[in-house]
Amino acid sequence: MISKQKGCVDLYGTTAKKWQYVNKVIDSLMEKYNYTFARTPIFEASELFHRGVGETTDIVTKETYDFVDRGERNVTLRPEGTAGIVRSYIENKMYGDPNQPVKLYYNGTMYRYERPQSGRDREFTQFGVEVLGSDDPLIDAEVISIPVMLLKMLGLNGVKVKINSLGDRESRDNYRKALIDYFKPHIKDLCEDCNERLNKNPLRILDCKVDKDNKLLKDAPTTLDYLNKESKERFDKVKEYLDELEIDYEVDPKIVRGLDYYNHTVFEIEASVEGFGSNNVLAGGGRYNGLVEALGGPETSGIGFACGIGRIVQALDLEEVKLPINDSLEVFVMYVSDTEKKYAASLVNYLRANGFKTDTEYTSRALKAQFKQADRLNAKYLIILNDEDLKNDEVKIKNNKTKEEELVSVDYLLYFLDEHLSDEELEDIEGLHECSCGCHKDNCECDDDCDCGCHDGEECTCGDDCDCGCHEKEE
Ligand code: HAM
Image 1 (cartoon, rainbow, N blue to C red):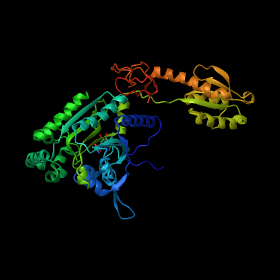
Image 2: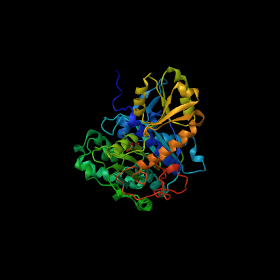
Image 3: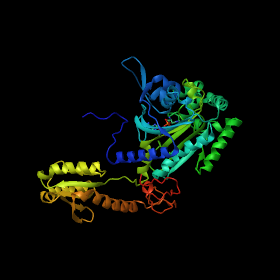
Image 4: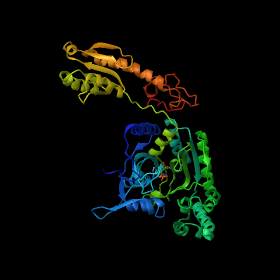
């Protein structure tokens, strides 16, 4: 047997369904925020990440998957999404679009050669956004609000938003000098890499994985003490907008982030769920004014964030959030003998073409075993074909819950299923929505209601919106 590579995961079964659900919520959320989907290649010229993410970062020095391709080019599997999006923004001259800022989102696999542990994989999936072409602090608040809204819509309660500011170039330079002065007398107490980092990039000492528990790092000067007036004022504006958006946050001056491109606002969203372990940052991001120029484009402001889908699903599991995953089948077509099998094949095709989630028997089970299979598939309606009924252009339909059975004319079949299944759907919705905010958690304390009181989310035609703004429940 050949096993999968270390730090990689196979996605299937219920976990795969949860990922699909999270992705659906992401797509619908991004539509509401008016961000458009972008896809960049999984591999890029190595230089992009060296220049973009930073030569002295752990990601670039220790974690990239680099290789030389058959044309002797140095290429790297992307360790993150920002550098690729910025390259694409420049290469496709998106800066020339009068519609600025350009608001993009992406969702794809990233690769980092890390020591695998819970929440830290070598292949992982990030959903992220990048906004290019605006330095308005309102955009900083909007970007922070996206993962907050996403986690709320998914029903996750235990999250903490932490923000900080690294300031502009002048503030960062002053902070850099302060760090060198602080660490220099004690540098022998730190690891070999930190010795190298001292003069090249002292900020990276602060996120050293080897020295992370060293008291010297904990007592180091913080960025906020070195912000100049403009940077302080800018940070205050971001906080004001966050207050306006009613986002609970904590200013944590220790957040510096492990990538070199950041300045001004940086933030992280932590899961404060018991049992999560140390890799509990669900989302992280910040402003990166200057990166577009560094990668060969015109002067352009930028900000974004990314979150690990795997970590979000892990948090949902730990909080035991009940997701509205549709695990049932609408129709299971059964047949008594091979005589009806061809008819079954065309009926299944017909029902699928008309929008019904349908399946049938493929392993020659006897009729009794087909009933069991229908139960395993959670089928709502069973169509039991036999020759006698078919001669009269009729089929037997059984409601698998009430066990009621009736003969239905084939001409009337679609209408019958439509009508009966929409009644079932309403029952499902009532059963599922213990909470009215759409979070699907029994213990939710929010008291948001859809104005019409139906809790049908996207299906509702009343035109009213849920107070939380999501109107998304079933999705
Ligand atoms: P990052 O903090 O390196 O930032 O990663 C963002 C998120 O990706 C983390 O908070 C975590 O949820 C997830 N993640 C990172 N590494 C792993 C891993 N090895 N296994 C599982 N999940 C992981 C960035 O990547 C920046 N590009 C974010 C950004 C976008 N900043 C501005 N724009």
